[in-house]
Each structure stands twice: as structure tokens, then as C-alpha cells.
Image (cartoon, rainbow, N blue to C red; front, side, top):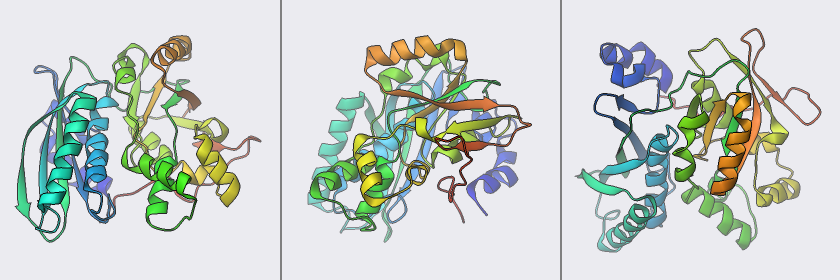
Length: 319
């Protein structure tokens, strides 16, 4: 059983009379009358981060991953609550000092504030982050329109390479090692750009599980399809170099998640305003595909227009 089946077959029944839960089909809870937007995420050692030798970097990753849920909805995060489960080895004085410094840096960077939380003893290290923001409106899932253009911010794939370097599955020189590991621990979030999403975006999501997997989630209730042009999917110059050196396929790098970039759709008529806003804010925006009729199957095309079969669409939460 996977996460989607658990939600649809069991948990959704508990939220049937609560419109703010958005049918448990989005990244957030949205109470329109109180303008409150809330998200919850859990991170477990071994699944979401490898070890705790660099607690300051792990904290940066989980904080950014959490506030990304609000940012992709066009909402500015304001408060976060953190619950930590661990033991003396994880929460020793040295680690706690590093955690404190890291959280202060993230609070300053994103203008967020700690609201509270909880700590419990556990042999397994984990953190649960609750993030809160306020907005009159959010950009929900399942609101794409036929012929919408599909866009993504930033670059994809660097974080996945960083994870594989940490797992010692890929060997690179020290320069590339530092770059990719940094992208894994400190994903780039586009907060200022997200504040403009309401101007042009019809629907949006952050890329956490993988480009194709999250695109399917974005339109899962709609009778629509999509076409993605793999050559338009943005990657960094360092990833291009690595693909050339290691002969890794680009589609494999960009379909494994942990990028936390904003994936959104917009009418073709919004193209110029999107470009102008991105340019003024210094944000990289790429048009990577199209929302299509449900009569056509989803397609991922290579540079020659040939269909690509992916080994994986992204991460699946299995139980």
C-alpha cells in the first residue's frame, strides 16, 4: 500500500465535511475565513536524511523542504513548529548548538519564527515540522487548463546527484562533491517569485517526489494529460558536465525529486508577464511542456521528438 491509497481509502473519510482540508488532495490546509495556511512534514533518519554528522545542514534541509509547501502555493511562511524525537547521541550539547545556529540562520533568511514544538526520547531520530502562513488566496492543485504551458523554477537533478554522492554511489572530484552535496542540503527556494504566482499561475506544486510524479499529482483529479520536452527541463552546468563524464541519462537525474522547485501551469497569454517577473527578480524560469487533452497519453519526449520510457517517475511512499 502507498501513501495515496491510505489517504483515499481511509483518511479522506475523516475530512469529508471540512472544506479547509482540500479533500486531503493538496500540500496544505487552508482556512479561507481565517486566512490560515498550514502544512505538516515528517523527516526520518535513513529515509529523508543520511546520518546526523552534519546536524546544521540537516536542519536547513528539513526547514526549507517544509516551508516549500507554502511557498509553492503562493503563501509566505510565517511560523514553524518543530517536534524532535531522538536520544543523547543525537541531541548532545555540540549538536544542539549547531542546530540553534542553523535555525537562526534560516529564520533570518526566510523571516520565519519558531512557534513551539515538542521533544521525545526515541532510538530512531526524526523531526516533524508544522509550518503556518496567512493568505487570502492560495494556488491549489487540480486547476490546470487545457493548453496551459508547464513551467518550473530553477534547476532539477542536482539534489538527487548530491544524495547519491553522500551514499557513495557516485564518485566525483571535491569541487563537484561540495556543489552537489550543498544542493541536497540547501535547496534554493524562490520566495519573492512565489508572491507573484497569483498573478499568472492556474495550479502549482513543489517538486519533492519527482518531476513526473508531482506533475501527475498536480492534475490527478482532472481529465487532462501532459507533454514534457526533456531538452527544456533545466539543469545546471555542473550537472551537464557530470552527465557527459559519467554518461548518466538526463531524464533519470531530473525525475527523482528533492528539488523543491515550483512546478506550475499558466495560460500561453501569460508567457510575457512570467518572463518579465522572473527577469526582474533574477529567477530562472523554464517552459518545459504543455497540458494536453485526456485523449492523448502523457508523453516525455527527447530532443528528436521520440517518446522516452522512464525507469522511475519519482519517489513513492510505500508501506
